[in-house]
Image 1 (cartoon, rainbow, N blue to C red):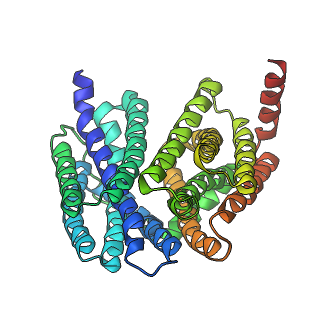
Image 2: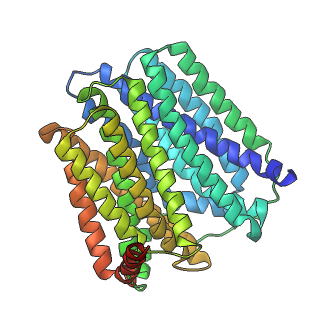
Image 3: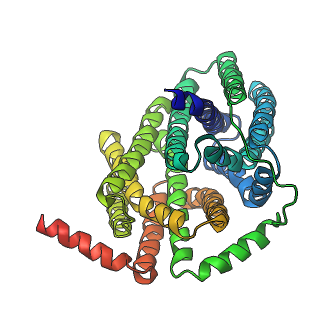
Length: 411
């Protein structure tokens, strides 16, 4: 119990921060489309999604340096103070229904999240030591998942029963609670580095790490495969926010239920992948996930279902998405040891957010000219291409896939 109490401030501030940011971003997508000319729904959703991740492309190396040269708890406290101020500014934007203010706010929230992200992960070792890394990382990611799930769900419900003052109250009380939680953290941090020579020039850092990853056969493909998982998730979330109300005639609350089903599907798929892997890195699961997503997305495109059938197919797509992702993520984590592991994770994050940013631009273009249903077939091409390329060039993936198929046939 004492151990849980020690971890609780970090878990709490992480959950509340992720919840609030996703709550705010989803409300922008649902409410700001009413402030602009009809037909611009996809543009608003794409813009909000793109602006939130833009900072990760340019400021991740700087965030890493801050975590090395400053006390990590102080970084998070300062970030929470800035976030509180940003929610006040964003609330003003909602009050006067100004798209520019709320979009500027979402960009700055993404910037703050970028700068404190390495600090929160760096605190895991300070709190629990080497033996606490697995517990701390796993639990932190679990709370991140819950925050990313519950924030959009609440936003869809509130947008159908919109009350400005209640919304602002939630923004501010959650932000203050997050600040209070991290202030209660008791941790003995190692002394910050006085001199750090690592480059903070984004593309130079990524280029150097890309070249290092190229020396490990298949690693760059695995990283791009993992990034494609997040790109697929980004496409699906943006598409659901537009497709469900515009094409299927759902309320915002009903749309929230579908988004929740997709999030639960990813969680279940990830859990099943972990069970099947039995503590190993089972790359054979990635082709299974890719094939499963291809089938369900083809059904969504050709059948154009509605209601419960649509929700079930989205759930299954997300479940196969989780199965596809877990072996790739585990491979990146185990690819290198020591300090280079941090560089590799930073490089992986850059590629992930680069593809998420690209997905926002492509989403606007595809839906403008071909409609939201075209997103499903576009994802089929993306998944098929990535799955085929990894099967062909990533060592052991085809072999492991064949063994899993053989086991399934003999069962």
